[in-house]
Length: 248
Image 1: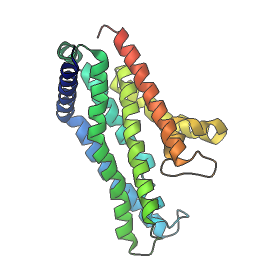
Image 2 (image 1 turned 60 degrees about the vertical axis):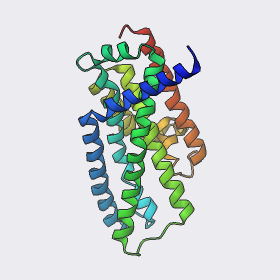
Image 3 (image 1 turned 180 degrees about the vertical axis):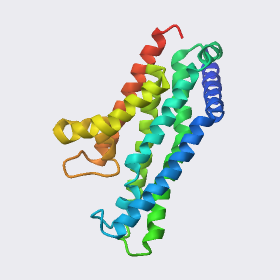
Image 4 (image 1 turned 120 degrees about the vertical axis):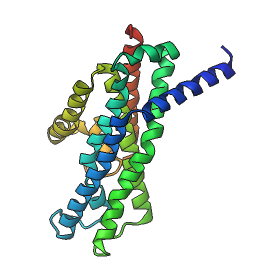
């Protein structure tokens, strides 16, 4: 196969995955609901922060505090994007159109990254903007570098966990099982390990959170980004290996 043919096939696979993603209402409703919930939580954290209940008056810290909860919506979005293939036997149609499974799964994750990147950036910025407006100058204004670093860190974190969630969805091929497993990890197992195991700072959730909310005993934002990227790539590779061994 010539490079031009390979390039055209890759472009067609990506276009097909973008089209499928665009025609998935539950996924987009999930993102819309996530944005709404994030704004509600950001408002609540802002009120608490201005009253001194959170122990911080930084616009960035208050505005991004809700991401710890809003990340659930991005996890669900990733799972829905992956598991929708297995509803009604659509995966057979997909493999008939794109028989090269490596190409198909790669295109799916790339399409997902393209779709979720602006949503993640907007979600992060919206919370900080709301806090800035609500504070009326009473909260500590962030430096430009600090704000840019935190917002880019949050955006990268949300994109990576969405891709990781899609990989888990492709592995399990069941929406409920994948969502339950991932949310249990992010909200129960991860925090428990973080409190009890020093090495837990290298796990996906702890390393990822250091990208935008570094702590004294955590890895640096750059190390966190590398670690979460490595975990995400590992999950995608494992999903691909399993995908290639299955009949469908």
